[in-house]
Image (tube, rainbow, N blue to C red; front, side):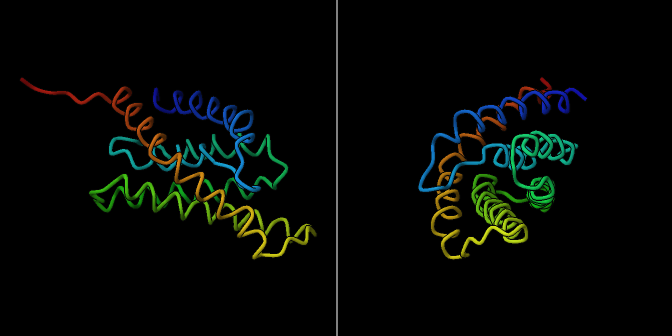
Length: 167
């Protein structure tokens, strides 16, 4: 319960930081998605539960601020959360490497869904141009932010779910 309420606050703050500050840090036309990175990092935490609820919060917050169809955010964020939870349940021993792999997968998933949605509504963006100008720069920025966000999620999980050490 506390973790879910904390998720609401953390994701709200990260959505504001992403929409106000990180949209100013662009590489070509790509930008970082720290909300997606936090979802991945939280879902990789061993003690995290109800990660799908965090994904719903995040998708709702980002969808309110985005002109892209809300389904892109719900499908994308739930998709990366499910992949990260599945990776955690398999007993993956290198969560930082998993963070990088899922950051790549999640970026390509969300950017691909965004491109497909824009094509459906009639915005003629050539695929290779979208890859070069938006997807790959966004991927690079997400990889740069992946470890700091993972560290934040790990510290947050340690604070919310303290381990009991018996003497």
